[in-house]
Length: 212
Image (cartoon, rainbow, N blue to C red; front, side, top):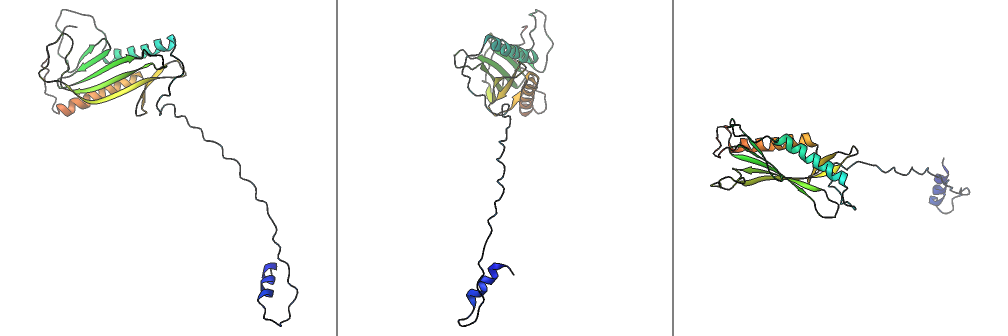
């Protein structure tokens, strides 16, 4: 019988009863092995978190790389075309370049992309502002529209450097795009607005076509 039962039995005997000497209860001290220190878990949040402020201004190489990314996006959305006097065939979406970006204009909806390079010295490279519109945007040199277009959705993305010296675009929600996926996302945004404004797809553009 374990020693602690002997000690407990001696304590509970009635007075006058003969008892044997109580055995001393001894408890051996065991040293438990110390668990290993937890290894810190590392996770790459670089593509899902807002870009951290830079401590140094961007270099000329970085600025040139970002401008190439901007030009690549604009070339996908609204390729440059030579000015001609010949009339162009009607298309569902008119694509125009602007001094700061481009405009994609459908009969009932539009999408504008504007690049704003940062001219300060805080290390930022700038941002792309993408807006989805309901209605027709007034362009420079065109007649004013009877009803002003209304912004339905906005998306702001900023360039983020990659190890390959290329840049991707990160939104305020953490979503990251390369040039191809960002162009596809812009097209999807415009098509969704077109469908919402004109489910049958029968609306016709009322703006005069230009030869630029």
